[in-house]
Image (tube, rainbow, N blue to C red; front, side, top):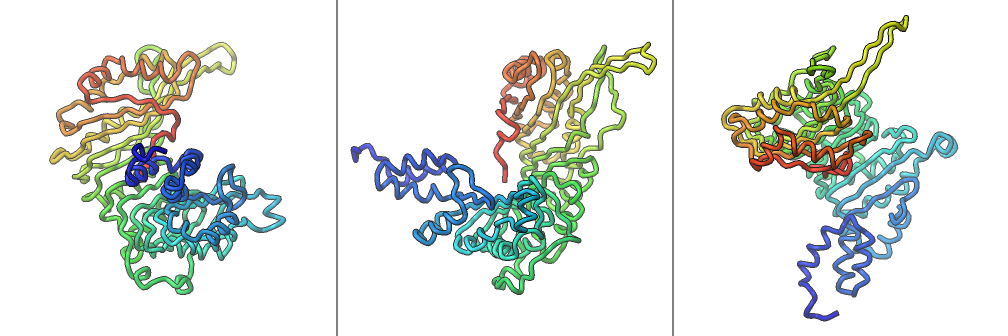
Length: 447
């Protein structure tokens, strides 16, 4: 390689940070020369994923990682993000072995002393519960979660994970909870036997980011935990909050949660669930046909420094056809459902002064036919977004994900939205931008 064509090490190092999720490309770069190899090494092992059952192609297994850390101990300092995936082996294998093989992961965790992020995910062909995990893995994991370097923790799909153990994660700044948590069944760890530092026992974590998704049955327990003055993470300084409701009653719990961080919250990501939608019959003029009125919106009036608001929701249509029991009468309904009314009410609760809101992101999932899409009225929502009341608003992003229906594809849908008489006016003014999502999970996690 011509030395004159080699970029400075600092620039190469920065370039490789964008390739950490592309291991084949990193491996190819490492083979260029020794200098590339030395730079790539730390990015190759920056994020490690461990499976308890069987690693996917190209991923390292717990025994392989254990051997690697013994043969090349310097690699341990490169590992900053660890994802642990616990899958059920199935009923038959569990009955025969009574093991999830998670004990193979336990001795690895103490060797990774520079972790900044730990994610624990339960994948279910059966049921993954904390009490089913091996005691050595439980203790080893809790010690790692309480490390002074770990700032981000994700717990996803591990039933009855002991939330109280996170009280001792003093460096914790970003927490994501998904699944079922029950304080009454909180199989906590005896911290006296973990050898934790005094700072872990008496210093309360202060969260900057919190995500609570798909936790509907557990919301009361999570709120009770977060409202404990002594021990639990302090969310009074929360900057980012990502919440997803499954039932309308969840919104009441979220209202309580917002009160705890109203003075510091800057970014709110909200999935209010399908119950906030209004359903219309469009055989002639669109007529409201909700049998149950949507729940009232969250009250954002006390969130005085909110700068970014994201709302995820669904828009759908369906054809319903009934025949009377005697077969003499038929009734056909063409219905569609949108969250527009609820969103408008939500925006109306924003504080009038001072209003700091600069960005609104609408993540809409469409399951709709072409004819119905053309009849949906975007006028009221567009008028609200462009109103003087939201004069601080600089940008509205509409992210579109589409469940394919006959006669309509995502490109056509996006084109129809851009040409809509109400939305096109916002686009021409430079306020609205429409994007296409390749999947529901195309938007990166905020935390």
